[in-house]
Structures are given as structure tokens and as C-alpha cells.
Image 1 (cartoon, rainbow, N blue to C red):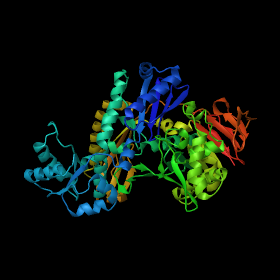
Image 2: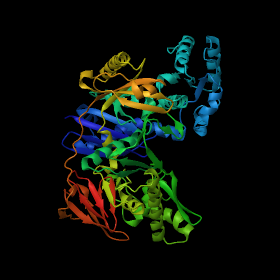
Image 3: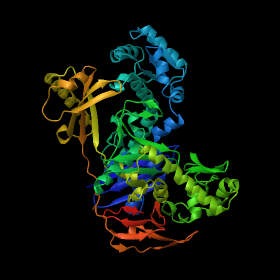
Image 4: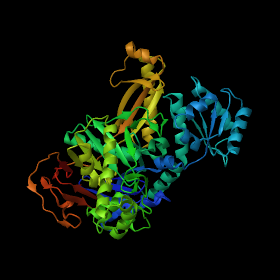
Length: 632
């Protein structure tokens, strides 16, 4: 097997994971928000150093079979409202209020008052005037989004007229997106919001991802860059829709968690993916995370499926301060620049990272693989100023109060995410997840924790289990076998062309057919694998509202091996030393531990990029696959 590389570009750190079938290596680098191509290349350089002991990008790229990549660029653009100014051409003035009410602040940021209402059968002159007014109002991208039963046909007619007046080959032509081309299903609100979000994300995603792919081509990459999407699969840049990159990073963690839960035969779990800014929470029932057929983005309904992942403003860089006698956590974050006070990069606000350094949990000399020395004096000044003095307590009491408040904020979110039920297992990953897992689990009354071996880069690790997949939709002309078979043939031809663009023949792909029937947000789904059926009967009633056949064409990619699934305590582990602090804690090096090694808390288990704090009353054991299972 040649190298398989996965990259997760986060807001604070960029994680890289690679496997050649026999070993898996990983690395981290700071995200460079001013130019994401820079941290993309630096991540590959760091991986090269891990593999070869030196930076040799040409050698690395020539050894790679696939690179799968996810980025927070889309998520951050929505959060920060950084993107193009959209204009909207619509056929019904009343639709504007109906769309805006879902997410008024987001609508005002993306579209505002750049709206032109035209008749569904508007002539070329009316459309030209509408477009000119939108451009004069500052729009640099235009969404044509109509409402009503004939929206698709009306938009197609408008498209023909507009492109005669504003052909795409002209310099300065305003890019246009027609809502029905992005999605054929979902109610009017979802189609329109999907078009707005996609148009808003498209320019930055296009520029950055093609720049990254060009970097690889310059080093003679064998295959195109693959983009990991929020549905858990991957496609090349030219075949990826911008909205499918939104929240794709957390989806990598969901995929990885499902793989590990299946590996160990575990069913009920909740995961916490703690980074520098947020904690992403997912609930797993029967080993699978819940997926909503239609998701939402900051309250805006969109016509794409999204895993049910909740996010709260608590992470390693979340600002912690005392106000009115209480310790408050987040949602403000110091990010990677300037970072926590202990980073010594100009930050002066207190964070949980500062507290854990003062507690003796983090090693100032080995943090971030030894590449970032932590300054305890700066951490002490920040905690004293923002927590201890406002509370009127000593430094140690302030540090304890910070940990309690931080763990409580995360734990309090878990019952809401799990519908009030206590899961059997807590999975903790992300760079800041393992060090807080026991504290969160205690407050949530969870008695078992799984820390993946690659917890620090787990979203990147999870991306490595994705395949190349395309999904196609075709309207059904009726419920009879003839109509079904015709739709199947049309989809097969679309899939043949699409997978050929990925470099594969359709014969080597798995094909799954479904029928979707219904309207608005209410759909029934029926699998059609096997003989072509007649869709009459009860399901046929749903077809009267509208129906489509869906084809998912999947090309499997080789994946990293997991190792054994055994969990057995065999021998007491030997610590490598003791971490000085308020309480001297034995320290175990994860890379030196073998399957069956166990140890009792309080202690620390750590590798280059994460530290697991095993609290008093907990015991860890190393599984056959090298993961850490912690029991109370």
C-alpha cells in the first residue's frame, strides 16, 4: 500500500495522519488563517519529518496514493460572516420574510436588502434591470431562487435569458447560482437557504482548495486532492459542492468514533471532541450517530443531511474569568494567536490550558511535541488577575474552580445531547479532550471512557476511513416498473460519467438505489437494490406528492488497520517518571505501553500531542489496538 494521508484543518491547529498499511504516523502544525495553503504545506512537511527524519516534500508527495482533506474554512466563514455580498432575485415578495425569519441575523449578513422581485415569467428587460440594481447595491454574487410548484422550470427559463445578457465568459460577469440546480428536494425554505450558504462559501473554498491542489501538482502528485465532506465521504475538488464542506471536520471524528465503537462491539456512547475553541458532542445509539436528513446551519434550514453534532463554546483556548462571584467559561477563545497566556505570545487572558499547567498536568517542556514551551509565570499572572483576585481566593483554589467550571459546562451539555439518558461510554478526543475526560465523566456520572490512540488527531484519523462517493437524483415519472427502470438507466449514465472523472470505471463501484417520496421536509425512503419493483401500494401514495430515485456510487479506498479488539488487564504498567506539581503524578508514555498494561489514578498517560489525566478512583488499561480504556 502506498501512503494514505488525511488532513484536518482546524481553526487553531492543523492535524495530519498517514498510514502505509503497517504503521500510522501523525503530526500537528499551527493553522495559518491568513493563508491556509501555508499550513497545508507545513502539515505535509511535518509528516515528512516524521517519516524520513527531514523535510522532503517531493519525496513525500510522490509516495502518496490519496490525500483526503477537510477544513473549517466554510464553518469559520459562516461564523465570522466573511464572504461575498449576495443578491437575490425572487418571484414572490412574501417569500423574503418567510426565509429571513429562520435566521434573521445570518440573512442580514449574507443578503440584507439586496433583493429584487420579478415575475416568474419576467422578460429579458426586467431581468436585466433587476441584475443591474443588485450590482449597484453591492452584490458580487447573485442567487436566483424562486418559490412555488413551478420554481424549477421558471428558474431554467430565467437562466437562459440572463446568460444571454450576462454571458459567463465576459470579464467582470457576476456569478449566478440557481437554487433548483443545487437541490431538487426539500421545501422552498431549504432550497433557498442552501443556495445562499453555498454561494457565500464558494469563492473562498474554490480559491484555497485549488491553490492546495496546485501545490500538490507542482510536486507531481499522482492523484487529485480529495475533499472530505460532511456526509462522511470524499470527492475531488472539482466535484465538491461548497456547502458539503461545512462542518466536515467534526464529521471526521464521528466517522472515527463509529469505526472504533464497531471494533470494540460498543453500542451506547457520547463523544466529546475538544479543540481550542469548541467542544463538539455527538451521541451514538446502536453504534451510530444520528443523522438528520435535512440539517440546519445556525438555525437556517438547508437541504443537505448533517450528523447531529452539538457544539458549545468550551475548549483549550476558551477564556475563563470570574464575574459576580462565579467562574465563567467561554464562548470567547484566544485561538492560536495570541493563544493562552502560557504560550508566551502576548496573550494575557486565563484559559484551562493555563490552569492545567499550574496544576502540574501539562509539562511545560514537552507540550505540542516539545515545539512550544509553556510559561508558568505568565499563566499564574493571568489566573491571578482574572480569577483568583475577583473571587478573593488563593491561586490553587482558583485553579480548582476553573477546572470544576470547565468540566461542568461540558458535562451539562451531555444530557441535552443524549435526550436526558446517561450513555454507557464517553469517548474523548481532540487535543484537549483526554486531559478533561475524567473530570467531565465524573460530573456526567459516566463510568467508562475510551481515549483513542490517535486522540490528538482523531478527526484526521477518522477521515482516513472515508471512501469516494457521489450521489445522484433523478425525478420519477411514475410508480410503475417502466418509469423506475428508466430513472435507473439515467442515473447509471450520470454515475458512469461522474466516477470516470474520479478515475474509476463504474464496474468497480458499489451502487445503492433508493426512492425518495414526499414533499417539503417530509420524505419516505425505500431501498431498491435488486429487481426493479413496481412502487404501488402504500408507498405509492407518497409518490403522488413527488418522487425521486437516488443513486449512491461508492468506490472503496484502502484503510488503516485497527489491530485487535481485546481488552484485558495483564500487567501493571511502569511509569517513565513523575510530574511535579500540587500532587506528584506518575507519568506513563503511551508509546512505551503495550496491550494489557494497566495503572491506577491519579496519574498521567501522554504522547507527543495529548495528555490523559487519570483522576483518583479511575484505572486505565491499554487495549490490543493501543487505545486507552479508563474505568471508574
